[in-house]
Amino acid sequence: MTAFAGIPHNTLVVAVAVAAVGFAAGVVGSFGVLRRRALAGDAAAHATLAGVVIAFLVTGSRDLPTLLLGGFVAAIASLGCLVLIRRATRTRDDAATAIVLSVSFGLGIVLLSGLSARGVPGAGGLEHFLMGHTAALTAADARTLGVASLAAVLVVWLGLKEATLVAFDPVFAASAGWPVAAIDYALITLVAGMVVVGLPAAGAVLVTALVVIPPVAARQWTDRVPSMLLVSGMIGLAAALGGVAASALVPRLATGPMIVLVAAALFAVSFFFAPRRGWLARRRSALAAAGK
Amino acid sequence: MAATDAAPAVEFHDVTVAYGRRPVLWNIDLAVSAPGLFGIIGPNGAGKSTLVKAALGLVPLAGGSVRLFGRPLAEVRHRIGYVPQRETVDWDFPVNVMDVVLMGTYGRLGWFRRPGARERAAAREALDRVGLADVASRQIGRLSGGQQQRVFLARALAQEADLYFLDEPLAGVDARSQERIFRVLDDLRRSGRLVIVVHHDLRSAADWFDGVALVDMRLVAAGPVGEVLTPENLRRTYAGPLDVLDELGRAVARGGRTA
Image: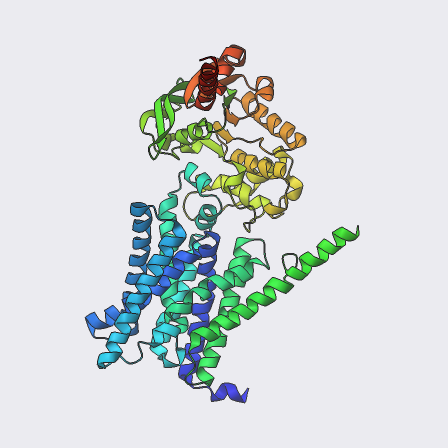
């Protein structure tokens, strides 16, 4: 308890906000995973880096919302490229995703290293968007991320029925007159937005893990979408907090890798020990069936 | 036929559908009136499912038009129910039986409104009719194939439609489920609905359907079962281009030997 009082106000605000980011990433990511759009989200995530650097080059500002807006535009542009490549060249999904991911990320790295090689003033710190670094966040920035996360969760809650319907059975949804393509675009835009909000915490390379690992782990524990969203959110929250704690304690440690490792540990626990779907439970029921 | 519906429940006018450059259905002209239990029958790849999808606006028409109850689809969507093929969804999806059946009420609810007491009652009644009331809270992956098919049927019943399209509702279904499904479809017919079923089993077709359409890219024949399911029509439906090639090949081989 004495340690709690010793934590600076800024660190506390950042911790709460990043926890909200982790929760929202778990919730929004669930629909990315259920609709099988995890890879597209990864391409969007890698593209954000170029967007962040370009936003800095164009505006000369290091203002976080400005940089993230650049990231969001790049994420959407990369998803647009994905659709175009698939349509125009009949390239298969996985190949098109790999192309967009690597090219957009390559562009981001070139721009970033160009900046640091020329020693452009004020460019220092942009490399944090590569791996995530929450210790560098101000309380005001953290609040922005927290509010954006809450908004994302609210949108999912509002459209829960529609998103579940389209993720489960898009053909039936279309037959009943639902605009499946529009709902799909809304979902992937939300995932892209979430990836951008998670960028300062987890970085362009690893932020996908924050929207993919918690839902997959959560699926092990539950058989309903609403409870899956909740469990996924809690796992995302725990992973995000783990990353923040590590980043605060070890000054030079990037947050992203720590978040991913905590999430992976929670996934491993879910994989082995979840009731019924866990490895142990399935093994036990297989043995029981064999013993009969 | 309901008194208000002077027009046939389904009318295909010269419908042509192509996937890319490959034509799947050619110049289909077909009108079916309610009530009835109507089978769409033909070999694999004959375009049976596509015909249903064309009626539901799920595939673009390369030519022709479809009218339902004498109107364009958009005006009568709420009167249509649909049972897609069972393999089209992931049965490991985290929803239970009740969740899926409630999806049948979503069209009536519209955007953002959640199912309430009325929708739950309708879903429970639908589950009762297909004999699945006791597994309402079970995850859908932990059902047999026949039970899964009945969940889809219950979802369509919850749509409270006047016209139903079912795509292969008996594929991979046990005898008990099959019996139950046909009893439900028969009830729908008795209450004045038209039920259109894509079906692959010729033997059971004559027992269950009032009318059938034989389809093999083109409409071979349509009408009452007794008139349509003739040996001549069946031969024309099931002797596709492959068989023609096969015959041609044998003729050439014979020609070679005699020469």
